[in-house]
Image (cartoon, rainbow, N blue to C red):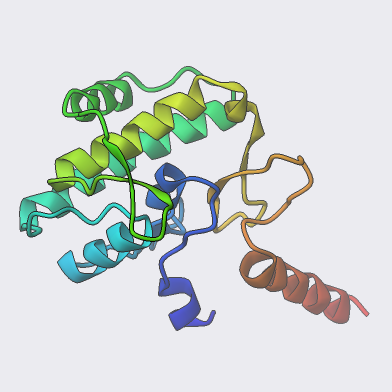
Length: 187
């Protein structure tokens, strides 16, 4: 396993809320990989999602993000498995949604539309939670898939229904190498 590649933040799940879920790698293994290890990594993730708040980050923000992440994981996995969502996850989601505020749209200097920067991490997370709700209650929910790598289990949006791996460059390669080694052993 390429440790550096595995520790990088993922921005390829198809939505910010799923990218947040992917900040824990190998979640269902005995040794999950925490990618949001500190406030600097949280800041990097928020900036990567264009959600970096105006206010400075504090330690409690990291706890709040991890709590929402766990709730979103439960909701995503329930959607993939066509199961009832966990009540605790819904409660956590609704708690975060209670802090949602309308976004203001404006035109930036280059003439492109943009939204106002969130004031706090709570406001940024409310935007993430809103996106999750919008997608989990729409046809997008039927396009959620789980990576076929039994160690990975990352949830991603697959609008064409053809993806097997979260990433052909990571899990796809890892599984092709495993299959090749198995074939070599059986010869």
